[in-house]
Length: 457
Image (cartoon, rainbow, N blue to C red; front, side):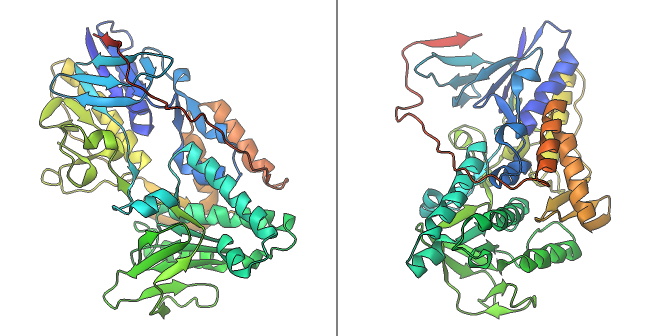
């Protein structure tokens, strides 16, 4: 019996699992095992819409067990990976024993974590947008800010409450800023003492432009639309600290200036010399991807935070281990072509890894990974977007429609697609809900060391 163990239930891990099932569905000599902390696949590109109340929480998650047929699934947290002994250890909880799973081949698809670049205070005080819980917490936070500001008499504190700063001018940052801006605009009527224009949304980017990767024309269109809708954009602005109330910035340009564009100053070269901090009680961090802590403690080579793999997606030091998705990068000494850490590249990784495992078990030569970029799209709020497919650039409502159709097609399961489609259409006729749902959890530790550990051979 040959066991292929997959770690991670995201885009890469799930796609690899399903591909392997298609190859070995009738082969009783091959066992496929999948381990994930969650028992669902999360469609992360729609998290901003969950945070803004456009889509219901459960509609962007698909239970893994409804997708798999042959695979043995474990919902558990990974404790250690030992590639020398070919063992992965899982934690035990109060209800179940820990496990050590022995494998013949391993696929690491553990994704990435937010990168705070060593700023512990930012990590402690900022909100993130990587999990379903992040989206729920952020939605609750926005509603809570409006509730507090409605009855706040101190003008300075009120101003800080009504200022939301989004750090990172990539896809996640731009889409989050646009959705939060729309959300606040829609619910402001419920708060009589708050004028819509009292609320300030700032988008902060360390480079000279937002949405790097899009054509300059599309990026400029997005920037102008965001500014027209009241969002202030800071460019060449790197965050250095955040204590929960004050966000400290420094310029990354040679001229030591931070470019600021708002509805009063739309000229792209308008600059402000002495902005070194912003007052905000809410900062949303979408800048950079970091190393999964499990990989930091492993024997895998992780220069710059990601596992280096060869052209076959194997780890050269451990040829029976493949790494795919955001946690992996092909060694630049082997292939000069760069592949961005996106969902479409992760799924392409998964298909190549599964194909190579099939060929490896069949005694055939493996194939090198290659991928042709199919395009990208982003929404910037109020039924407006930008899109670029096969060299064709589109902006406005048409791009927004393309974004919706593309992402809807990526959702696994017709029932989930229908639910999301209904959510989108209900949004045309009904106002957004402003109920702030409290989340509670027990204070006891989730995991504990147990004397008994099951060995899975």
